[in-house]
Length: 431
Length: 75
Image (cartoon, rainbow over all chains, first blue to last red; front, side, top):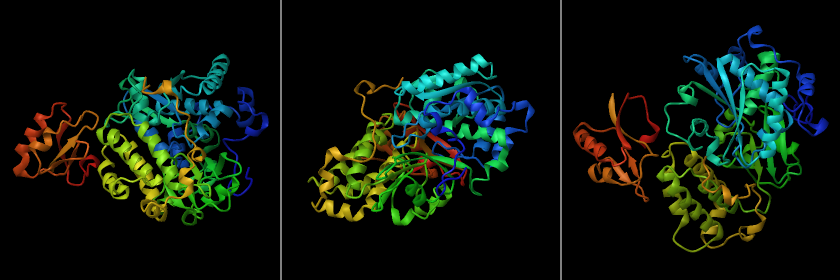
C-alpha cells in the first residue's frame, strides 16, 4: 500500500485500526501464519538475497550477521534489541506497542535459522507500559503453543550506551549494562560465551515478513542498494511529529513533507544525537539511506530526523544535546568521561556567549583528542554531532564567539530537541 | 609485520607512567590519558616493553599487526 510520496504500509499495516496492540488473532489475519523454519527455504539466504540491513543504527547487512552466528559451533543465543536509547527515536516502542507479534515472529524465525535455542528480548526498564504489552503477547503465544524457542523479556536500565551490543551481553551475563572492550564480538562469544545474534526489533520484524513473502517481495519497495521499507521518527518543526513507514530511499525532503514540515526550516539533525546537522538545502533531495547520505557526511542512524524550528538556536540545541550525551557516558574511558563534559561546557559557553577564553579554539583541539579513544563509539558520535553543529551553524558560531548571541539561545525553557526527563533515581543505575 | 602499542581504554585510569617512560610515542591529553602513536621503531622496543610492564592497571600492551591492518585505537 502506497500513500503520499514514499509512505508505505508493511510493518505498520493496521496500526490505525484499533489504536491498541494487535492480538495474535488480528496479527495472523493481517499477515498469515509464520511458515515453520523446516518447511521453507533457508532463511539466512533469503535475508541475504533481500538485502536487509540492520535498522538499529549501524546498518550492517543482516544476512551476513546471521551467517556469522550460524557458522559458529554449538547452540546460539538470539538477543532482540528493543532498548531504543536514542531520545529522538520512537519507532521501536511504536512497533512493539502496535505489532508485538511481528517482532516475536521475527525472533522465532531468526532463532530457527541460526540455531539459537533461546531468545532474550531487551527492553528499557523506564517503559513499564511497553513491557506489559510485550509480556501479554508472549503469554498469548505460550497459551497457543506457538513458539519453539523460549523468549525471555528483560528490563534493562535505560541509558544511552545501554543499547550497545556489548552492553546487552554484559548485562545478560550478570554485569552492568555498560559497553565492554571488543573483541570478542558477540557473534563470537556473547551471552554465556555462546555465539550471539543481536538484532534490532524492527530488523526482526522485517525478517518475519521476508520469511513469509520472500526476498523478491521485500525488494519491491526501496532502492536496489537500500531495499525494503524503514521506520522513521520525525520531530521538531513539523505539524505531525511521529513514526512514519517509508520506502527506503525516500528523499529527506519528502519524509519531512509527509510529516508536515514548516516551509521555513533551514537545518535538520539526521540520524539522532549521534548523527549530524545538515543544511536543509544540501540534503532535501538526497535519499534517506546510508549510501545516499554518505557524500554529505551523514547517515540515517535509526531513522531519525529532527527539523530545527526556524528561530531556534542550533548551537544552543546542540549544547543541550551534548550535555545529555556527556551525562550518559558510561564513565569508563577517560577521554569520554572527561572529554565530553569539557566540550559540552565549551559549546554551552559559546551558545550563551559567556566570556572565558576562545571556546571555538578549544573545541577544535579537543575534538581531535576525544574521537576514537573510547571502548565504544559514544565519544565519536558526540564529537561528530558537535563538529557538524560548528560547521552548519558556522556563521552563528562566529557571531556568538564575538559576544553577539542570538536571542533564541537565552530562551532556556523553549528548547526544541526532545530529551528524556531526567530521572534522579536512575543516576548511576547500570544494573 | 610491525609492533604497535594498544591501550584498553576501560582499564586505563590515567596514571601516566607510560608517557614518562616512552615520551617518543606516548603523549598525555589534557586529562592525563595517553594518546599513542605507532608503529614502534626497533630502537624503542625495549622502552616500549618497559612502559607496558610499568602500567599499574595492565592497560597497555604491544600488539603485532600486519602492515595493512590499521588499528583504530592507535591514533
